[in-house]
Length: 324
Image (tube, rainbow, N blue to C red):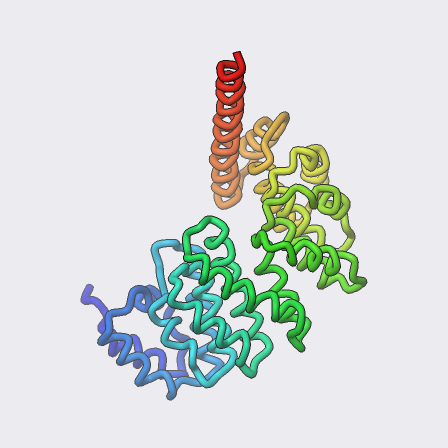
């Protein structure tokens, strides 16, 4: 069959008497300059509803297929006049670590007239906090991002922006961050507790262990889910028994997935046997595939545990030689 031209793709986008064909979505990946120009010329003629639906579909496709990249298109939409378009463009770019995006995100965080767009920019900046802690971006750029997020976390008028800024700061080693997390954790509003537990999970700091364990059975599903994720992110061995117990009784598929993935990060006694038991009894192909991925991740966790144990033993031997 003859390949569809990009003219035909844009014409299909403009024809709002019919749903936009899903088979065309992959054509928005890694756009050529000429195709991007053609698309941006047609873009103002597309209804807002259709634009938002397209961007949501592209975000879903990028999540499902890691070979798809819609970054070129999304970058071109960061200054779109519609806040919903800007917000969804940032969401598509959340995994993009190009530091050239930082000035744009900082400008949006401080100046955009949409609360949701500013919040999305705060979330996007969290990736650069993480990269800064790994020394993968210049210290000066990390400091710029940290200062902007601290300003937003402390002084933004919007509670949503303050919470997203706090979440983005989770991985930061700045001394100002733990008190912000602690303060958020003790607020009465559940939204703030969700953000605090999220930040705890990103912190890599086991000082939060007791806080996270205490939320593993919270009646609020959002706090419950974030606590499960945080237990996995911090590889809290102390959460294993509770997570295994919950896996026995939990009926909600999303929560079960979070528990299984957290256990694959925690590892330890009984985890492999439980996941293999679930895989042996699973009839659904998608669920079986997810369990296989979790078992692969568990293998990585186990191998890293052995590697760290070996390193510890070598360090002890070296110390004996030095003091002998």
